[in-house]
Image 1 (cartoon, helix red, strand yellow):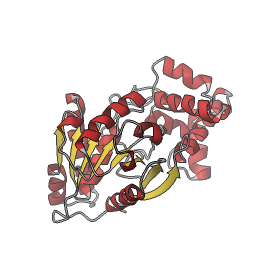
Image 2 (cartoon, helix red, strand yellow):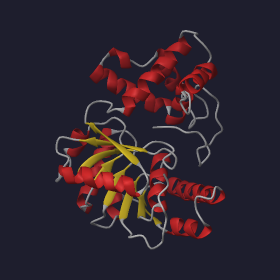
Image 3 (tube, one colour):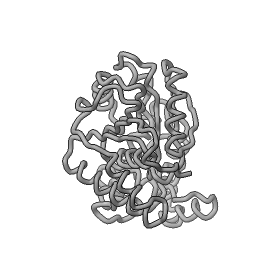
Length: 302
């Protein structure tokens, strides 16, 4: 469901930290729903790409009849850019960090956000412990995992991860905010891999082992998942879109906590060692254009 868009909607405020693929998608859906959005990103190249992505996505919305020209203009005008979390105004309704899955980096960002005293802090993590992330905050009750899926403008789910100290008020606020942008939610405990990462990764790793064993080609393994089980995209193509380095990091993390069923296949380790990271590098299980298109056409998750 796409939320109704109106310039007269009460303007809630959100900041997104990180202007990568996920950050751009998150910024877009909040701006589309009438929020005032600030994106913090130190890289000039990433800030430029973000503006291109938002422009491309809003133009596509107009072409498909999802937005009017006036709504597209309001959407683009609703997004402002800063270079760091320290430049954000204080007291925002919501801040979502969407930086790479690196514990040290995320904690550094969260410390900066803590100083800005937002009402709610969401972490767009697909596997890191919310309890561990919360250790750096003066008020850990306002932190909740808000795991979005790529492309954010298409996929309707946000996985809400509740830590030991996440307050009931924080969970209720996260649900309201998700509803305001037309998303549905599931609530999961702060256990390794949460729900979606465990389900998604186990299928992807098994597909890689099948490819290693010569069961079928990558194309036919993916075709089986799409045609027999009605998955929107096959596990190997999806892995390329997510990033094979990301897949490997998550597999190693879950192997440590959940056992050998999450051990990364040799094929995955070899591809990452060769720099074959999937869509972002131009080669993974498939060949991809470089650089990747700003507006993803495939339905994918990260």
